[in-house]
Length: 204
Image (cartoon, rainbow, N blue to C red; front, side):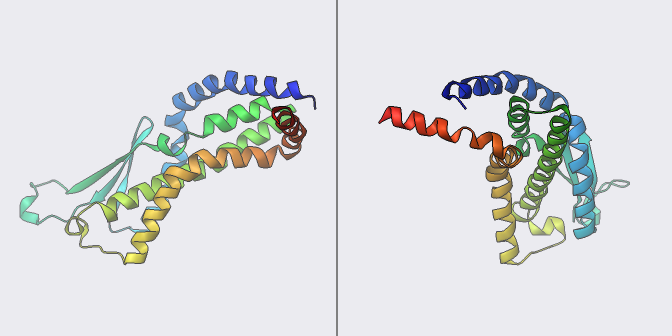
């Protein structure tokens, strides 16, 4: 592949990025439905006595938890609840980049549709991871235990939640899109290796 072929590819990425970010943002209220259902299933399975449900407003969600408050402090006919608002976009901001990379790479129509669908599915699971551990971090590391029925985890469990939250917030969103793209377009990427060597030799 000639050295100047890298420039059109990078130009395509920058042209596709604004389009992909707009599509990603304005479709977020629909794409977050899948992670919401997955998280509700996981939380009901793990913490059925605590979690009351999940409410969605646009692309934002709130996970509702049953609060442990003395009965005399609760107004008649009311239920004590703790809402945990979460912005799911924090854990899925890499999707536009992944789509821009895929659209800028050589594709057939069938391959393009297949790769876009696969990347979206994988990135929705990454988003689910981020939301899930964001909630667990807020619930068990930031909420007083007396408000959640003195539900206390062991220290190693708290450490796992903290580490998993950091991975879901700092590592997976920016890294996963690149890993997906490199896996799907290995042959295309290897064509650029001689180009990098030529650029390096010229600099020396």
